[in-house]
Length: 112
Image (tube, rainbow, N blue to C red; front, side):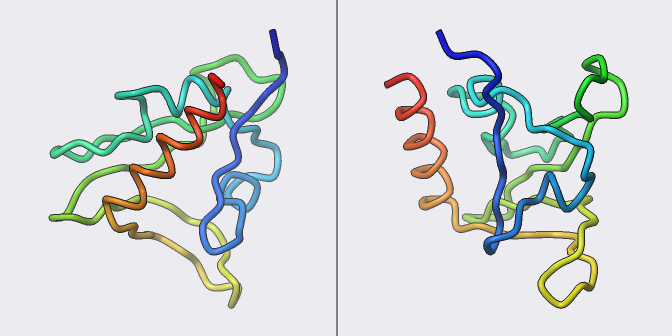
């Protein structure tokens, strides 16, 4: 059994978690990637926790983002991390098909 695994979330080559909070560590991949899990979009946007500072008890000072659907686009919002131009990134969008394929691919690799 593997222990100590955590999830990295990259958007345009930037680690969203580390850039949002340098103390934060992404939650265990099975927690975020499981079918129907937090990274799966739903018709109604919802706030999900994706990380917490290392050594901090779950539920306290967690890094959250809002995940929702706009048509065939997955939207992560309520973000605030520096982008390539050092300006704030507040929202990112992904085409639904490739987004779901990547979540499912990553989960399949995890469970092997």
